[in-house]
Length: 192
Image 1 (cartoon, rainbow, N blue to C red):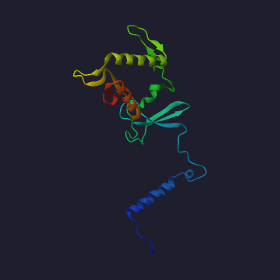
Image 2 (image 1 turned 90 degrees about the vertical axis):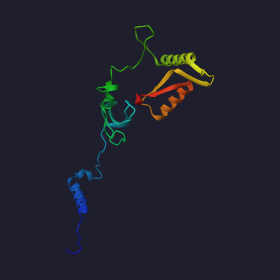
Image 3 (image 1 turned 180 degrees about the vertical axis):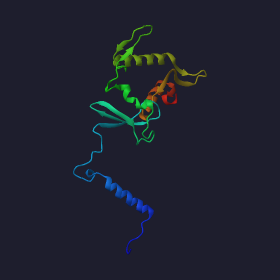
Image 4 (image 1 turned 120 degrees about the vertical axis):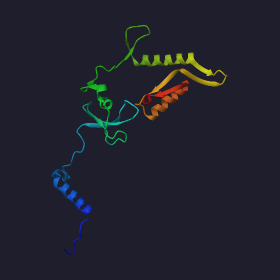
């Protein structure tokens, strides 16, 4: 044949794939006016699993304010679409069949020392009580100097335990707040 050159194996495979793809594609893909809906009809939001320190990515699909699907994020560099059983149960922790989980506490419960009954309290009372207890503990156990008279300004009666649901900025703020109180014992959930 005059003017024809022989195709390499690679060029033949490329041409075959392009031709095959063009033959099996539905007509609607080529229709520029009809459009092709590439997203689901529900809202999808990326999130991070809250259970451990790994930080796996998940995609939560919701419709009408309810979680209807939860799956691993295939584009996330850590888990690449997979989730452990705890991660897959994230939606069930807050909701059961789209409703608020009736077994999850929605209010603060307080039991006074020596009492056998739980009492419901509001958040204002709770936060003030926590601040009061921290101040009382710090005032009672704060160490200004060690046994040799050196200034140490530390509090060994309170420890801080970080959680994996916190991002770096939140961890930084918590660490600064705890150090300002004089805390020296820090730990994180991911190491336990």
